Image 1 (cartoon, rainbow, N blue to C red):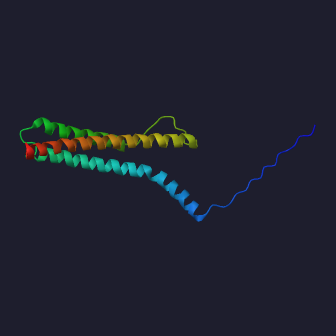
Image 2 (image 1 turned 90 degrees about the vertical axis):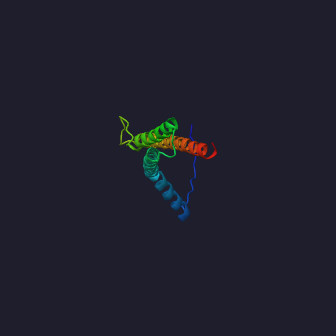
Image 3 (image 1 turned 90 degrees about the horizontal axis):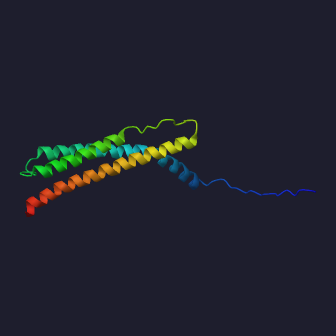
Length: 142
């Protein structure tokens, strides 16, 4: 019995300049995600330190209310702590750097961890600012 072979025709074309541009741009965006995450964490660290210092130095804002001052400084400190933890290099044991799938998975986990850290740090920073704003509004309207 004779077997019939299927012939599959494949046609292709060269990518356009625009397609090549977007492919290269996409690769660059993926590579730069870590730098962006680290830059965000650096800014959160600087902002948290500045706001914590301002809260401690300017006594007139928190006059006669040590609890709100403590809360504001605590939230700024937690923001600082989480951003600092996120800024440290992400580590995981047993990553085979000869296997592209494991490298990709490692990078995705590391980026997810950094995003989590800067999100949590930002939330604590905003809550601390909310406490300061609450105290200012209490002084103005209370």
